Length: 353
Image 1 (cartoon, helix red, strand yellow):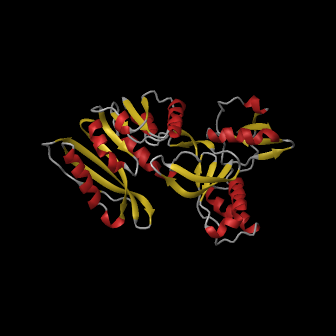
Image 2: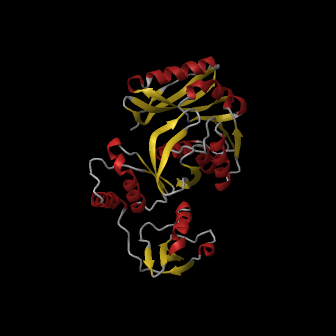
Image 3: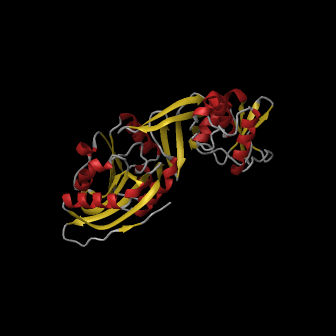
């Protein structure tokens, strides 16, 4: 089994770099030996390990780590030993690269620093942040604060895609992987795609890597998110992506796309832009927040009316629930295939979750 032996004072830096590359063997324990730390890995690291004073060894004697399902037990044991009441401790977490994101209930705030230290050490994270109030505004800016650790830049690996991001400055929702990968699997090779709200490449990167499109026009208004979008294009060697900085109304080319992606809750304000970006016939993938009692009728009426206003007929429409967003509010989506007016229309609804 491959192992990296590193002086303990450099171990944290090397571990962070290895975790960002997805190279740490999570099935075996990181172990101390004299003044060195032994880190089990799953493949040959591409980074220069000598800059950390590390060397490669072969060692099959490192003990196995408990299975992932035992993490909750280990967390509970540590929280209990620290005197943190079970009733106030967070029950869930998100992981983005080597950063763990927690929601801290009001009654747990006196214990926030200790909770973060426990989650960080048990989950082997470099940083733990608190998600204080979600994502805000058209720039999709997160409201987080660092509870433990000192770095919010990371690389999150998901579905074979690497996303570089700063969790304190830009958004990535790891719970929506099925949406991103599922869409990429439906787009055929050679298609032209316009992503109106690309962010750091949430939809753009899986499409560019998995679908084999001719071109993906990726537009983003937030200059910070755009910097990470460009970085992720390079990181994933996605030579078929054209990044566009600015408002999609001004930046997205007209009459070029087979698919238009609208992964923003303000998407209804930009439906005219989406239809203008299509060649003629094509497909629009649309997301919005919708009151539970209005789904799917309000969504289908809105999209059908927008299509008519932009001289299109709906050929097929598929709607589904992505997830519950808030009490009584759903995150919903639709995939609408349209054609120039004069062709037959059909709609269908598919509920998921």
